[in-house]
Image (cartoon, rainbow, N blue to C red; front, side, top):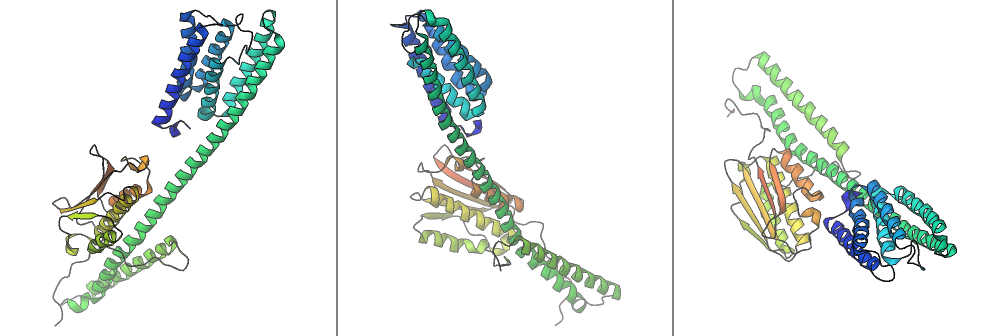
Length: 399
C-alpha cells in the first residue's frame, strides 16, 4: 500500500503532522494546562513524529503515538476538568491522524490493536484520576474518542480497499495490454515470416528447373527444404489462429510498413494535429519489412499519445537513416495534462510498453520521457535489417 502514496500525498502528511505537533505543544503550554514549554514541545513533536514514521515503520509508530498521547494525558491530568484524557483537541486530532495513516498503510488490524490499547489505557487513567476528575466524565470521553476513531478507521479502510482495487485493476490492465501487444506483434511477424517462407518454398521447388545440372540428390534436398518450409508455414498459421482476438478472424491482415508513414502523417493532420516531419522517409528496400512495421507502430503510438495528452501542441517527427539503422524521434510540448505514469521512462503506460516490445522484437531500443525543456520525447533506434532473410537466387533463369 505504501507504493500508492505519491510524493504529494507524503508531503501533505508531513505538513499536517508538523502543524498538529506545533499546535499541540502551544496549547499544552498555555492556559488552562500550563505544561512547561520544553515538556510541551517535546510531547507535541514526539506525537507528531509518529505520523510520518507510520509511513515506513507502522508498528513502531503505533507504540510511539501511544506513549506520547498517554504522557500528554498525564501532563494535563490535574489541570483538565473537561475532555480528559482523550478529547482535548490537539492530541486527539494528532492521534486520529496516526490511526488513519496506520489503517491506510498497514491495514485495519494494527490500527484496531492500537485503538484497543489506547482505550484500555484510557480506562486505567480514568480510574487513577478519579480523585481530581469525575470518573464518569472521563469514561464518556474515552468512549467518545473510541467512537470517533472507529468512524475515521472505517472511512480509511474503505479508502484502502478502493485503492487496492484500483491498483489490482491497473496491474491487470497493464498485464493484458502487454499480452495483447505481444499477440499483435506475433501476428505481424507471422505475416513477414510467412512471406519469406513462401518464397523459400517456391524457390526450393523451382530450383531444379532454374539451375542447370542439378543432381538427383540435390533435387531431393531442394524438395525436402520446400516441404520443411511449407510445414513450418502451416504450424505458424496454427499458432496464429490461437492468437486471434475476434471470433471468425484469423488475424492475417495486411501489415502497415515504412511506406505507410506518409499516409499516417496525413491522417493525423486530418484530425487537426500539427505534425512537422523532418528528414526523408526511408525506401522500402532500406529496411526489413518487420522493422518498417515496428517503425510505423511506434510513430503511430507516439502521435496518439501526443494527441491524447497534448492535443493543442505541435508534434515534430525526425527520421534519419544512419550506419546504426533507422532513427526515430517524436517530440511534443507538455501542456500539463499528461498522466504522471506517461511522463517518465519507467512508467507503466501500455502505449510505452507496446513501443518497447516492438523495438525489442526487431533488436532495437527505445526511450521515452519528459525532458527539462517541458517536452515529451520518444526516441527509437531500429536496425535496418534483422536476421530474417530470403534465400538468394542462384544460377540463371530459364529464358
